[in-house]
Image (cartoon, rainbow, N blue to C red; front, side):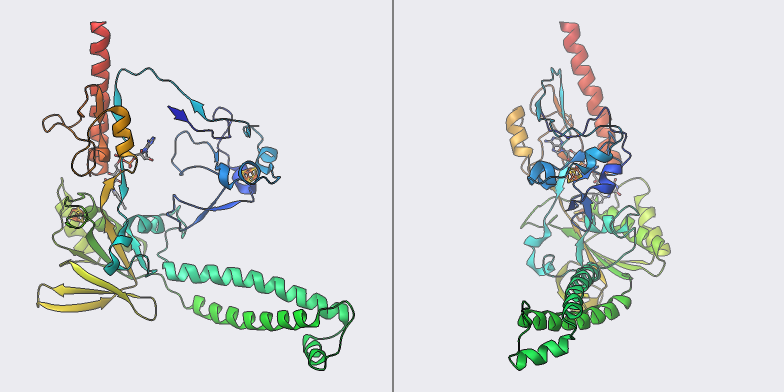
Length: 417
Ligand SMILES: Cc1cc2nc3c(=O)[nH]c(=O)nc-3n(C[C@H](O)[C@H](O)[C@H](O)COP(=O)(O)OP(=O)(O)OC[C@H]3O[C@@H](n4cnc5c(N)ncnc54)[C@H](O)[C@@H]3O)c2cc1C
Ligand code: SF4
Ligand code: SF4
């Protein structure tokens, strides 16, 4: 087994976070599905075990970029930073193996009619999870991605404008002239020794146009409101013969859950869930769905959405056939959420080859119909979404069963000698 270097001693790190606070290197945060940023020294996710930090070597100035830094080592009082740590090959003698490598979410950009990679306010359910999370990039507020992008543009532009204005002011002070006077001199082909008048005048003009853009963006940003009207599109990549024929089993319920959480966070949020049928299969799931409709302003609309377009205000427009009046209708939303399919983890074929087990026709680990934890090879078990789509309670129950089956296999082997 390959154990990758953390560059932080697991035994010494106390998880205090002083290193990340001072680390100067910002990186796009994959855990927040690219919606936020983290430092080059980071925890994989807040509840990760062990609760210790790791250096993301390629994004670290010292380890991956050949620059001098070492800030984390200086501030770490536990002396846990170890830039010399190496990847390790660890040999484990195992009596049984459990494959618990989970799933990946389907990439909806392969469905052009839903515009995921074109329309900023069309997001995946996973992205919405992060937006709704108190520890997420918007602290749980439903800010629209188009608005977040504009806020970032404003931030960057303000920084650039400040820098440029400072340079122009320094030139004005140094030469004792205004930028307008410098412009007049340039027109008159006059010179000031050691000063590039053209560059000065260009910078002043750029600073002026930036100032206008900053004012315009500020006005627009001040008018932003959080999303109030959400559309959830079910079966994106599931129950669709072009992609996956199977039902992903958990997405109907996570859409109801997300719509309820959004309404709990802001009682003005209303949601429409577009589905062929809403599969509330589980104890009390049907009651949960009905409660969502009654208490959380959720409307369930039967139908498969045909297309999503975008209006001038970056609002997604959902086009669908209403099965009640049998007409093609459209409705404008603040944000659209795609309930994407559960697909096999990318590494499953390689892992199957390595362990000598078979995959099923959908690419999940194949199991025996009467022994759902058994792979095609004795002593190797599988649990959770590595076996097929299932929710957390089912995955946890399967994990316990798989652990028991593995313990049984080891005990039998020991008894036999
Ligand atoms: C948007 C969304 C919301 C959801 N909400 C809910 C909900 O509210 N309630 C609910 O019950 N279910 C929910 N689900 C479903 C839930 O995510 C799954 O049921 C659950 O994650 C399955 O657990 P798992 O351990 O089988 O797989 P995973 O959670 O995928 O875990 C597998 C782990 O194995 C790791 N791994 C993979 N390959 C390797 C390798 N080669 N070596 C080492 N590690 C590896 C992965 O990095 C991952 O951490 C939701 C799903 C989505 C997409
Ligand atoms: S060495 Fe510098 S860039 Fe690298 S993790 Fe430490 S503080 Fe961050
Ligand atoms: S759980 Fe619901 S949304 Fe997910 S694939 Fe099945 S029917 Fe479609």
